[in-house]
Image (cartoon, rainbow, N blue to C red; front, side, top):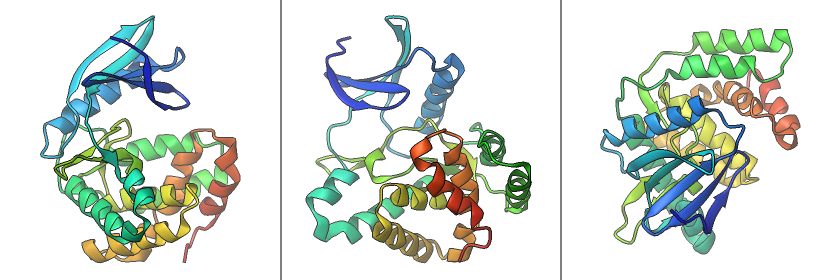
Length: 249
């Protein structure tokens, strides 16, 4: 495999293209268990009806763990939004349709969303009172078994020439409450500074799923704490503001 063409660089990994393959190479300090969990997540979701790049192998390259997947030719929904700003509402509606399709799947062996969120709250470097409040709120939310992508944003959806939508980056997928996944996507729009897009997304999701906006909003402090656990200092103040909004309106 040739690691020459870089297509993405993240904090913990670098992604390369080699012909019809994508090679995701993780940093030295990225744990083996997390790499294997991501590969297992992708393999399990592959067995559903969602269009997912095929997992080809898990290997080591120059001593670093790597996941090799099928390369999907196309443009991300994010790129299409930038190229066609007049069609943004249409693309947001497409994003919601794709998310609904994912949420309608059942993959029983995936990790539980609530368990992951409880762990993230513990790791978020918050005071004990705030952690207690968040844990209590999380415990009170309904239990579902929907497939939740966990990082569904326009950059993780590839539209091919024949208009097929492929969803990538399944490292955060769980099974749980779909409103949590919607709250996460809403927050990701905010983190990109696209407040208008966030509100359009929220309105579209709630309308298409007949979900009360207040119900999705109750998840926002929880998913903000989950994001906070990543330790990105540039986001910390912003996320703390969301966590403080206990009765968000």
